[in-house]
Structure formats: structure tokens, C-alpha cells
Length: 131
Image: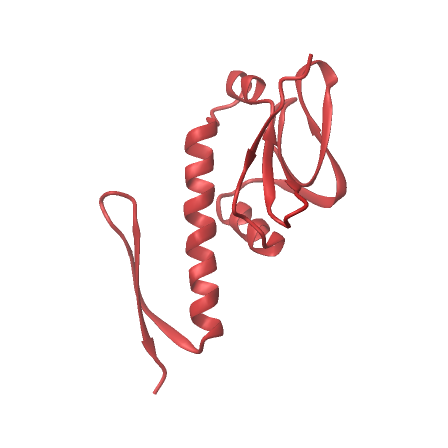
């Protein structure tokens, strides 16, 4: 019996996804068909797969609409690591969005003058035009 759960994300950029995982200090593999390990050897396949340090992985599967779905056996991940689905997804989305905004700012020729993390965890970025 498979315990895999898929959660749709808005993540589209694989390079930015990999940058996000590096910033969050996750070890991962990328490729066309990387195995995502689950309960009793059950396997799904993804394009980016995090090695959690246990026999359970967290994967990202490219969807027909070009987004990635998050795929994992969270029962196994939760029982064998300190990772939790909700906090993992929140941190992933926050970091991915932060990096995406910074990338867009630089592509538009703007300068990031200041960044700070607010008490509620939100990130504030002050940008200005180049002179």
C-alpha cells in the first residue's frame, strides 16, 4: 500500500528550486527520473529529490502545466526525520518566493538596498533604481 501524498505547488523554475534547496541546506539529486523512496520500498519518480537521511525521500515531480508537485510519504518522513510537511512547505515557499523576487529585481536592473526579516517571518526588501 502506497503512502505517497502529492501537493501541488506554484514552483515552475527548476534552477530556482535547486537554489532554494541549497540555501535550505538540503541534499538533493536532479534528473529526469530520480527515485523517491517510500514505505516498504514503494517508489515514485521525480525530477528533483531530497535525501532526508532516512529511507524516505521528498520529491518534486514536473506536472503537465509545468509546475512541480511535492511528493513524499510524509508518514515515513515524519517518523524518521525532524521534517514536517507543513513547516517544510512553508519554508520552501518562502525561500523560493524570496529568491524569485530577488532574481526579478536584478533582471529589471534594480538594486537591492536592504533586506530584513520581520518578527512574523515575512521578508522585506527595499529596492531602488540604478543611477
